Length: 99
Image (tube, rainbow, N blue to C red; front, top):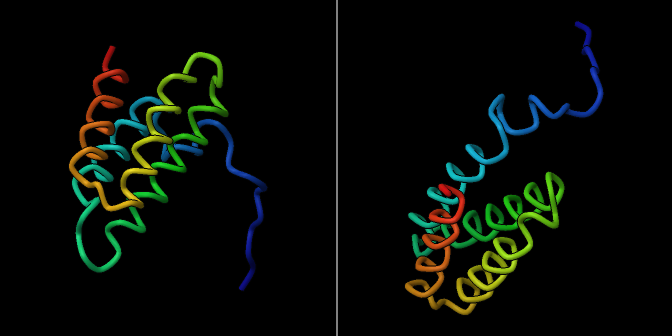
């Protein structure tokens, strides 16, 4: 058996074959829905918020600066278990991504 190593993921495959904005919308929708789920929801949601922030910054840090700050605030609120406020900020981020 052999393993084919192709190197790091490229821009097309980086986000599952879709563009960064569709990927970010999908990820944020999932994170918003599971923020307060017991059994790992908070962990997965905060990891997802971090990954989306990182992806947007990598894609165009200047263009998404306000959005990533909003997600920073949502992540902080989620960790402090202020789920409703965190969910509102993630919803606001989703609205901004639709524009």
